[in-house]
Image (cartoon, rainbow, N blue to C red; front, side, top):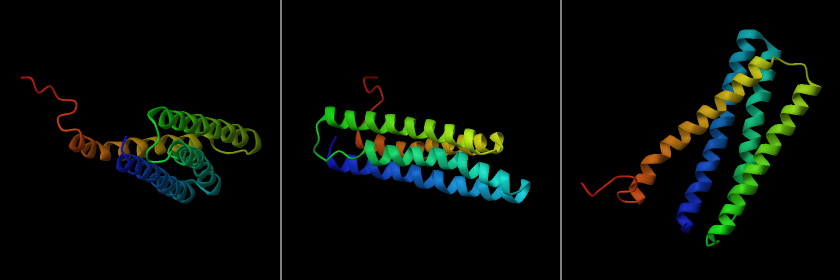
Length: 141
């Protein structure tokens, strides 16, 4: 991976985080206005859990220096993914055991953040196609 591609990947990771935070706030505001304060807070917590997991991934998964070896890049991504998983599990356990909230609102906001994840990744696909030439296409025919 060249330095520019790593920088692009870092930017992509932070776009995911920002998109997830924006969707979380939007869903929390809608939940609050439609069904009250507790629904808004539940949505804020659910989306916040996912967003904080993505922050952990962005911070740890893309911390390698630009000229790091493939093994170092892979190790950083695995560490980032493990940290993301741990953050999400710990926060879900804490929220579900310590706070009485609407699980439906919390899980809806959590699930909505995955839509952001996939939309941001899909928006990046044209850039990937442009860099690899005929990557993914059979040019023999």
